[in-house]
Image 1: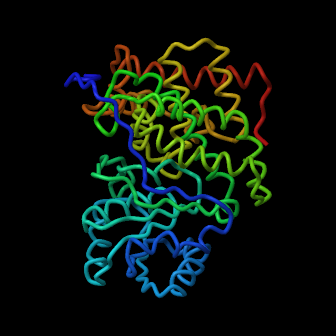
Image 2: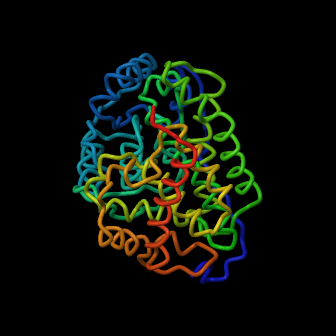
Image 3: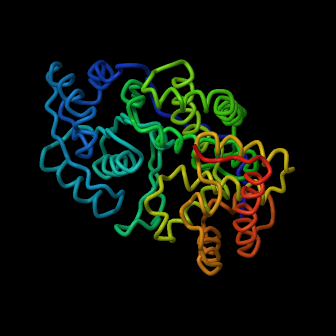
Length: 376
């Protein structure tokens, strides 16, 4: 099941352009002009106040005619259809996503349905969604629905680090939770096909390793800079790791157990308020347990995630009294046909995954007991 068609070609894919820096939104017209002049701008009400008005002002000075579409909050098929109809009514010639992961995933799906180019302008560094040629869709209730795949990656990804630095630090931390999974998962997917349908290239493996290196080196420092709303070299490095390196890494490297367990965890209603990367962080501990890594290595990851306030126990996730039947349901969903857990280079079944989930909580609690860690 890892590589059923015996694919031998290596494959790497990426967006056409990635731009990152302070006040980058002010130069948006320079990078978006070749896509069209009548964009459908998808953003929610909060993001509109934070960056939307500034973006529209910058574009209108260069004679863009922007139609704003208010994102409803959930990346669902229903929301995609509603926004696509707006794009048709306004004869939009490309789509702009301005916001977080769910806004981005929705806009990519809208653009694909309209056969238009899409430009991604993340306002947080909370996920690795911006660069990829896929979206994750959820049901209106918040449960994981499906992955949707596109023929091409976004044409432009433009990250304004001044905007990112003003976002709550929780979002940057969640992005690190998503990004720390990149290398952990990809190194167990060397012989499985990636999201492009090919094997890993050497450069994709190197990107995954570099992503992890940056997080361990600068993650805590960047988190503290974000608390001060300061754009620093550490923040710039981590934003790039969360957005570009993790995005390229997961798509061309491959996902495995951490994200499959995340998808299963969406079935627990109490976890719907958590960010994607917060759930993935716990999934990383589960995967490391499944991988059978030494305690010293497991401790290193747990220490990192706790340093940026990521949840690694049931209690920190907000489900201290979770029942075994709920966790078994998570394991069953994680092992569903077509899930990324089957990319792992080892035998997997529901019992193993259920055990890993329980053991991950136990290992993290043990680390906290041994070290005396306390949440700030």
